[in-house]
Image: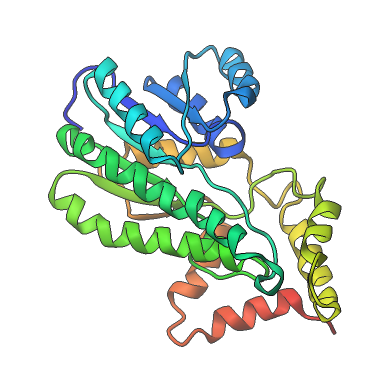
Length: 286
């Protein structure tokens, strides 16, 4: 990056989790941090975290599925700061469920936030990132590499993001912009606390034939997200900061050794049998 003034970064989806921790970490590392979220009514946790860390954040509303909002937000950042040095695409939403029981409106909504929102923010920011020779970091998931049961729509969106960014990477490298994707594995969330609600959502509208596989999947996922197995949002934020500030960042970055081992199964799996053999065990009923 060529700017000698304080670098400016825009982060999407900062009301909770990875986005919240990333915004605070970047501000602590000296970045002017534009922390955005769809609903500013949910900003209290971010404000509290920033106050506890002793950092200042510029918190703004941004709905990544609203094209006009994306344009006006990035235009305002440029008008106020004169440059934009990095974007962290983090905003996203889960879409747990079996496709047979999921309405297409829900499928489209998940694609809007998880894929088209990333595309729109990226497209709008790229002229400014080229001017600053900046960085574009997108939080995907190990689910952007390995398709996972009952996450058909979520994984499809993350696969699309990975393909989009992988295709964009060499073009932007020629133009001075470093493009990376960061792939977390399980991160401590409210999954275990909400597991009953997740089961209810999964079985709603599903044929009874699905129930044994659903319970097998949820049991495996509870274990994966348990303390000691899952990372914290702060762990992931540290990897994002390291990627953002690296002299020569990799395109694909996993956030833990477990995530690296998991994605390696797919990346070395030429015929697909290793991945499908692995995930079949997640829904085994005998």
